[in-house]
Length: 218
Image (cartoon, rainbow, N blue to C red; front, side):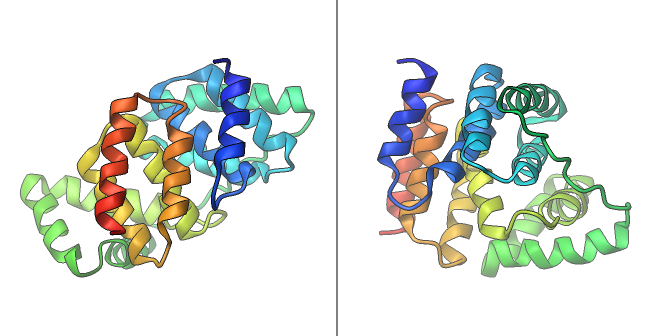
């Protein structure tokens, strides 16, 4: 099935998310797996539907946390090609002044919100693995990146789910699916996010993710 047909099929299958939001999640998942052609086509579809270019930039930027800088660089190249095709500008995500104290405070708040009653245990586990990793998770991950403006917390968590299932990171995927449930999100948006990610990753990874959603929202 061609990429165009896959995107059409996805749009017709959605239960909760609109197609514009789903195409952004496809781009995120494709960034994670290094599928530049799919990033480009999903980004073009997103922009053709009058999606917010700054939100797309922010979603691709966030994904470096899960896929690394090389994936982000190649995804931005693809998204810029898509924007040029559509005739729009891929608006840049805002640049913030580095403020480690601010990142530490807001990162700790968001980490606690995401992990809820398990936040202390998760933090202790990270610290036991590597104190630097724990610090970077709070300051860099949750403070500098995931607390940024443009995308709200649910949009960011759906992007995280798309990236994590595409990358096959099951334990972290479980945590972020639980975060969506903790935020009051119903199962159907999570299912739509998995359908979006399915365009970029294997059937086995999606099947594992569906088992997790069933267990969390049972």
